[in-house]
Amino acid sequence: MQPDVIPMLDYEDGQAAMDWLAGAFGFHEVTRWVDEAGNLSHGEMVTGNGRIMLATVPGYESPKRHRKHCAHVQAWSALPWVVDGVLVYVDDVDEHYARACAAGATILSEPEDGGPGRRYRAEDLEGHRWMFLQRGGPKEV
Image 1 (tube, one colour):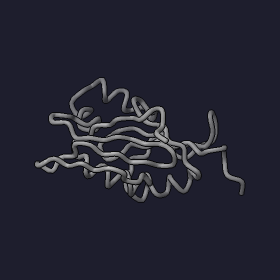
Image 2 (cartoon, one colour):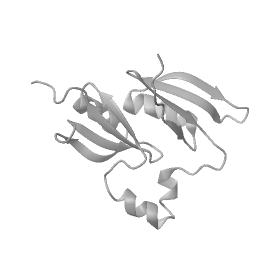
Image 3 (cartoon, one colour):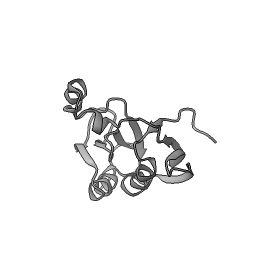
């Protein structure tokens, strides 16, 4: 069954993004269509019952590259919040966080309890922002 909402994200290097998202955030590749030039024309990845779609659009500039020359993006990027990002539920935030750190994710906030539950925030290799929220609250120790 398809999810009711599927985030669609552009990347300057969609193929590298798919490989990185698999290693760092645990997504699993479903579809990878590559054009004659080697650019990702369409990609799909899943985690749990969630799905994302990715592509490389000619002329696209990632958030990470854009903030280098745009004061407005620099200003909101200085905050750890997820702006225009994706929320992903995971079974164990601390385990997920360790995996993301090992893969070189930019950590915006360490794992913390509060609000909707145990969570952390990170940026991917091109500056897209993600929040990972533990299902069912903190794990029992």
